[in-house]
Image (cartoon, rainbow, N blue to C red; front, side, top):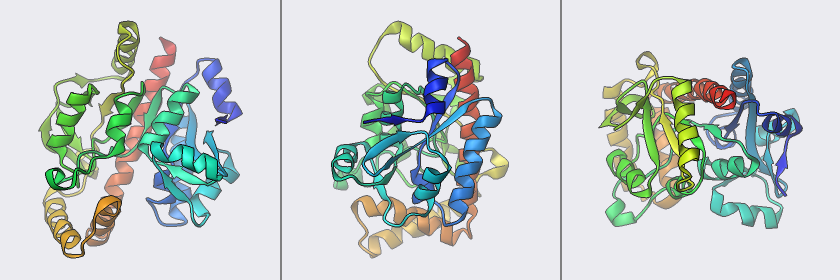
Length: 301
């Protein structure tokens, strides 16, 4: 049932570096036609680092690990492309549906295919007002039981960052800052919260991955939190002001559940004149490059 592109399968079998990429940013995160250009750019960035890109999606009920040109164009341009978390996968497969995969679905399908390294923008996490809503991203639970190394720019800053870090600790998910002892805040280089561990090179991350396998402990992820460069981050004062306005607007308009995150992210894009989107893309580009270097170090081991 899992369709692994020939190039991806050959790389896995030959122990050459492969990097998994999510497709939600293509179908739901960017306007057309920019979304397709960014998708192609990210795949090319992986190739420039000597690795094979494996963009993941579900097409006509078949999970795909690695997309060809036409399939990537479908994800970018087709109307009605669903947004699929890992819980949605059996439903999408049974219904013959097509959809872009979130962090949780991408991580699961990548691991099933044997891909060990995954690059994304920011993780989901514990939502603000959790004590009232009990709203927590499915990303966290899935990463607690999936052995994959995720390169990200922290968790989305619209979330409750300290609660998310505490939840990751409770779930036993390892977190390390890349070249920093501060946890990045997606649009921001520093969320204001520390991390206990710092890794400083792709080779060091690869050693962590090998140690994880040698210990043969729980099947959990390693999160490599890679901050967006300070010169490319969203201005922290602008971020704080617009996010406060967005949260008030969300409450006033009665936005709840799964609609909260896209509402807040869209509000930030519109009220920062696109600066938040620029910071997001800067983070994703850096994460993709680092993930490819980590995958290369991992396969050399």
